[in-house]
Length: 121
Image 1 (cartoon, rainbow, N blue to C red):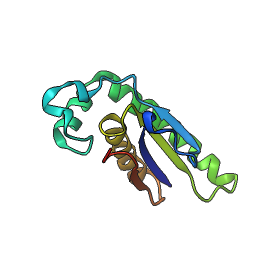
Image 2: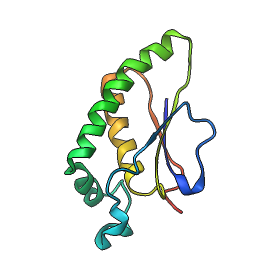
Image 3: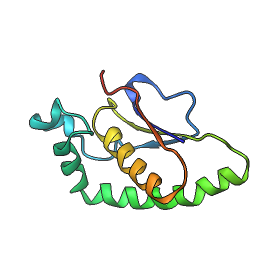
Image 4: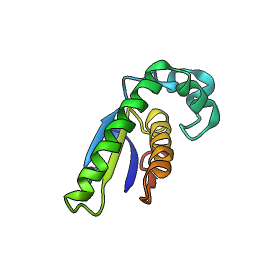
């Protein structure tokens, strides 16, 4: 399984099986002290994790993936690419991808790779 964080302004990942849009979350880019950081930085992670909508989104998404992944496996799918997108691919999508990677790694026997496609843009 691969989790890809990306920025919508650079286009959708063409190989994505599932795409989640997290642009509804407040954008850390507009907070001066967070702008130059990424979703991999603790300050951005703390900011996003404090938001009730972040926790709710993660809970619902984790539940859905816990249901879907075994179904994909039953159908013979040998690889799954899940794309998480925000505006620029540096803050929200990076943080959410890492949170989902932790959950999936802890709750499945699958290898979960992480690709931050647009983090350096």
